[in-house]
Image (cartoon, rainbow, N blue to C red):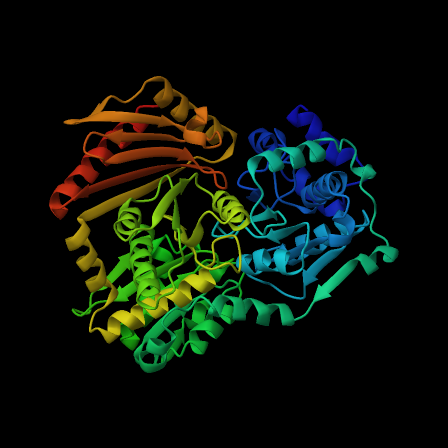
Amino acid sequence: MNYKKAYNQWLESDYYDKETKDELLSIKDDEKEIEDRFYKDLEFGTAGLRGVIEAGRNRMNKYTIRKTSFGLANYFINNFSDAKERGIVIAHDNRNMSREFCIEAARTIASTGMKVYYFEDLRTTPMLSFSVRELKCIGGIVITASHNPPEYNGYKVYGENGSQIMPEIAKSILMEVDKIKDMYTIPEFKKEFESNMILLDKDMDEKFIKAVEKNSIRKDMLEKHAKDLNIVYSPLCGTGRIPVSRVLKDIGVGKLIIVKEEEMPDPNFAGINKPNPEEATALNRGIKVLIEKEADLLVATDPDCDRVGVAIRDKNNQIILLTGNQIGGLLTEYIIKSLVDCNKLPENPLLIKTIVTSEFGADIAKSMNVDVENILTGFKFLGEKVTNYEKNGKKNFIFGYEESYGYLLGSQCKDKDAVVSTMMIAEMATYYKSQSMDLNDALESLYKKYGYYREKTTSIFLEGKDGSQKINRIMDIIRNNPITNIGEYSVEEILDFQNGIDGFPKSNVLKYILDDNSWLALRPSGTEPKIKIYIGTHNQEDRVALDKLDLIDNFISELINKID
């Protein structure tokens, strides 16, 4: 539909409320804004919707929630005979409109005759994943925009295995949503449908916490030494405060200091524009407390508590921010070593990582006789692999992660889980402190053994219709003009995942492997208006690895800057 026609339809139809129409009238003279809000429907990206909260079909609002929820319910009902009885569970974070969108989705789905479970207040994303399987639901929804700026919200969809839905299912759901041409065909919520809506109590929280804490490996060590560990924690004004504080106290952490300004849920995130532990600026307050209290480390979870970042105070009182790749490497070595030491390593153990994650953890795992498998970016691909191995028993998943601060161990959920990850980071830090080492000492010992792995991830934000088009141009131009060498290094292999290579699903990702095993990858984000550039190098000498990193970074930056 033409964007102007769609805009006028929203203004003229009795279906849309006065508040929505007033907002749309306020942009009547801004043609570019009208086009951006109405040139397309807000589409499924990484297993759901994500966008700015505003009126318009390319925005997050109660109407896009209603339409998507009706299409989602129809998909489940049309494909699963027991869908209505098994139902869907819905959780939400603390963002603007999250509660309202949760209730909107619940009422819309309940109106189709499906059972809907929902919580009385905000919950973490891993809690949603856990609840889907605990309740044996046909699927789940979490209302969140994860670590996006405050003006965003989102809608992530989960399958019955507790993992985000796979691309082919997202396409089928989208087909159902696209069938809805008239909003009046969506059933109106009536009092009689309230019986389909079931409010969950805190028993589910207790079950989740117990499932998380089962993953602690060195319990005897924690009983002796956890009291010596002092942690500063920031939930970044999100959902992590209660479950993360609980597990850290349960494992015996001596002193837990929560960053006061970021302790309680706040849709504006106490002024943090990007409440993302990947962003150094999001940790500023926590680092200040880390220094003032002379604690051992800072952990910060993103608003929906599926990612976690770490900063440490080393022996020289210097603050070091660990990257996602470094945390992943440290956890890989600690988890495998601990499982071996405690005679808990299963047969055919497996580590899973994404194709844009460093080889650091993978090389450690392989040296310790643990298989490694790669997946595309997105924990839904990890969830699918783990689910298949649970069914066929060929391999036993022990740990998985991605460079963007997402980690998972255990079977309590099938998505990134910052609750269990924070617990394991604390256990690891306790272990090393008992050996008179901090996490930086541990990292350096791994680098000396395996060589120095250096990585860099850069995000180029390009918003709106023009930005989307430029992202496509960048990928098309680079794809159609293959890179053959970067400085003195020649390109050994080009992996274009859009062709569905090596059994991977088709994905808009380009990866270049250089003749010294350094690598470069480009990928448009599935959840944000940006293109991401990933670089990885490795050498026994740190200076050489860093120089190669700068060389590749300068090369790709210059190349992209030339593209209009």
